[in-house]
Image (cartoon, rainbow, N blue to C red; front, top):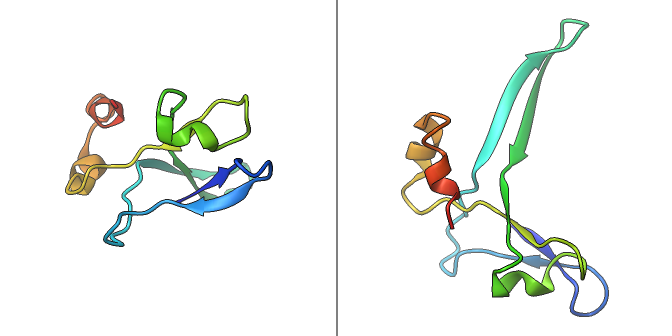
Length: 95
């Protein structure tokens, strides 16, 4: 995962990762839909939350703009996220 670091006055892509190099599990949504011409398309998005109050993110994103971060799933929760119903996913989004 990369975020723009603005401490230099310019956006510098900065990588976030687990110390041990294990990939981050990021909460996301996807959908498959058919357009008016009958073609199938898949759409994907990563879920984000407001991170204004998280000290780590004060230097990321443009100064004065909302700080946000992706929802990182806890280790071992990937299967639960993939199988969860809509109401159950709220538990993953709590700080």
